[in-house]
Length: 114
Length: 117
Image (tube, rainbow over all chains, first blue to last red; front, side):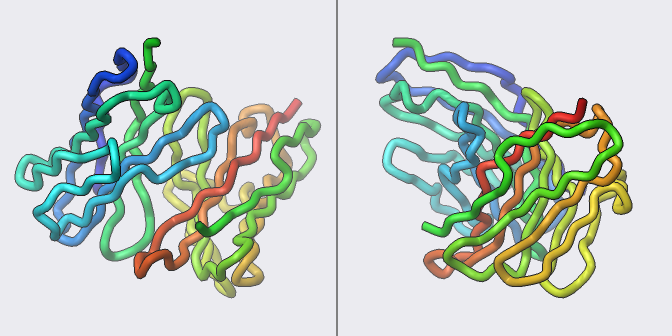
């Protein structure tokens, strides 16, 4: 079975600074996708970034980028120029290429310090 | 982007009663919808996969007779919590699979907070 592990329950970063959230996963599959979702206090899940496992190039979306290390099964999220609106719970997630089921990590609560 | 709605957003019910939660894809057709449960300060746990016109597939440990799922159309899935008890109190989130930019993405509803007294 696939698993997703986020080892940082909480993190804090100063506004305008850079922070990296860690995620590791375990799978025996070769076809899969990885995601980072943001859940603000409203509880609405928001897709931040996604990475196809077959792509070697790390995905980027504006201030958000990932460091995808396939051999190490590591998928970290870097947030540059942190903003107050980035404060939220961040979930790392895995989706098999066989079906659409998403497995979520336990989440990391990110605090932005003004 | 695609929008998924849930109704109601909050519901309070008495122990022993049944509660129905609706999940709708507003501007796209979703052959597959998913139901998640989220306890306070915890992650989302997949409860079941709902396919239009067929029986839902439940994850291990989820009581299918307690959590009835119906996916009657390409835009509507419902979750009915039968004979609800206080331990069923939770935040329930649905998602719907739809095409976005050539990618089969899951779009999440805003969630329903269920409180069973």
